[in-house]
Length: 57
Image 1 (cartoon, rainbow, N blue to C red):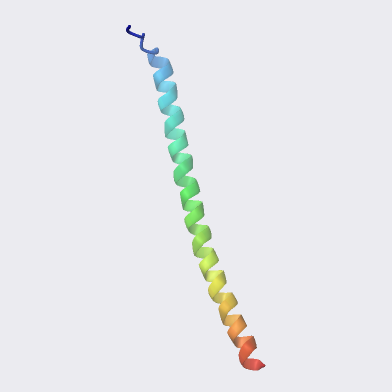
Image 2 (image 1 turned 90 degrees about the vertical axis):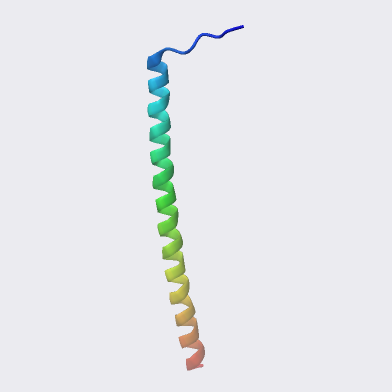
């Protein structure tokens, strides 16, 4: 049994949706990478402050 292909407009619409979704995924990945970098920087800062306070004790 052969099924009928969806209309070209539906295919184009789905392709546009997929492109938008891929763009959103890339954006979220960039946000996560930035957050990871920021977290590493903050952890380094916390470690340095902790060492500084420990040295004063």
